[in-house]
Amino acid sequence: MKTAPRQTRALRRRAAEAVAQRRERRGGRPRRFAGLWRYLAVIGPGIIVANAGNDAGGVFTYSNTGAKYGYSLLWAFLPIAVALIITQEMVARLGAVTGKGLMDLIRERFGVRWTLFAAVVVLIANGGTTLAEFAGVAGGLGLLGVPLPVAVIGSAALIGVVVMRGNRRLVERIFLALGLTFVSYIITAFLAPHLQWSAIGHDLVVPNLGHPSSVPTGAYLVDLIALIGTSITPYMQLFLQSSIVDKGTHEADLKLVRFDVISGSLFAVTVAMFIVITTAATLFSPSVEYPHGLAGSGVASAQQAASALSPLVGVHAQQLFAVGLVGASLLAAAVLPLSTAFVICEAFGAERSVQSSFADAPLFFTLFIGILAIGAGIMLIPGVPIAGVAIGTQTLDGILLPVLLVFIIILANDRRLLGRRCNGLAYNIIAVTLAAVLAVLTTTLVVTTVFPGLLGG
Image 1 (spheres, rainbow, N blue to C red):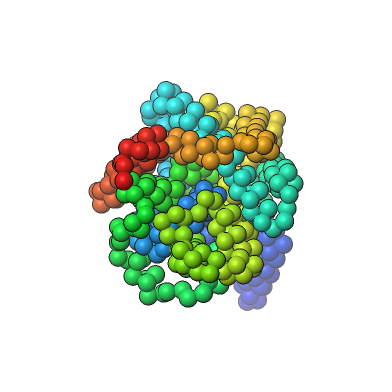
Image 2: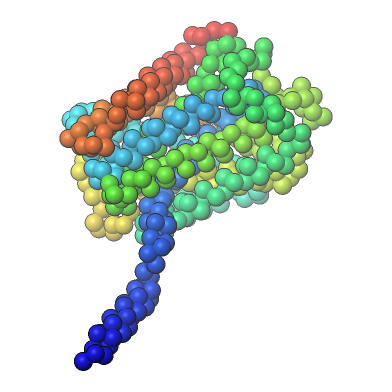
């Protein structure tokens, strides 16, 4: 009888070992790594959407900033980082706590009219921006020797197959892998000769509103607004909240969601800074190829910036820049149609999930494929005014962004939705200030786009 407790303990130990072995075979993880696996399960949406913001239009804006103004606008990236983190965190919190997409909440709180307004603007703006992303794919692959039809059709088919045939986890991993191509911009910066790190550090923390005398004051203001505005776009917020909901993230994971958003935002802003640093170090100052430099004139496209790097830094720098452009454009070309499909389906209460089959979510996948096909198809038509489309969609985004920010702030202060997770006083002061500044900046950008001569010289 004395051995019974000992036998019982031995039986329990063997049973525990058997459970552990079965758990390991099923893919279970040791408790000491539980935090890591929870983070890996939650990570994704914040990093993906922040990187998608550095799309073809963003790469052009950053390249143009460096070539036109040198390091003098690097200071703008500090408020950009704060604005991006604050905005993304509010949206991520709404998704994790409520389990609903942003358009769902807007429809419930503000009614169908505002929902339809936002949905129509997003549909038109995202469709036009998708076209610009395929232009970026074609331009980047063109620098690597791939013909335009092959680049456009191949990339559209690849995106369609991945989303339609893959599950959510596979799609997310591919999107995260595309984000790794942005590292090429950081590598390219270090290939540039004569980097002035002291000047970079100074201009990063000390605001400098000076600009080349050849640039009119109005044009400078528009460039500054574009630099700030290109980092926060409506589709980013809509996709972020929808993907968090689609992933099934809960309030218990809020700390990890915040870390995902903050780390993704900081990485995206760092990449944007290095694009500016690269083009500032190579194209802003006079050189043999550019006797007067590009100060005051800038570049006409991201492809031109990549091509200009070749004689100055070497063909490998051009290739790295092109790889980054392709990755950025592919990621955004996939996120934009998905974001639009989420928005429209949320507006009408239709089924929407990457996990669903076509039979379960026909509207969701029809919208996704339709926007993807239209964007790629129009790109193949000779003489399409891509620059005009980009300007028009940027204007629509400028109209929607301030409205969307007001919706987000109101919802983030609703105790019925968030309870103790709603905004505090200090957070509201920062958020409202950012919303007001962005509203003024984007409104000015829209006005100057429609009336280009309004600000004069």
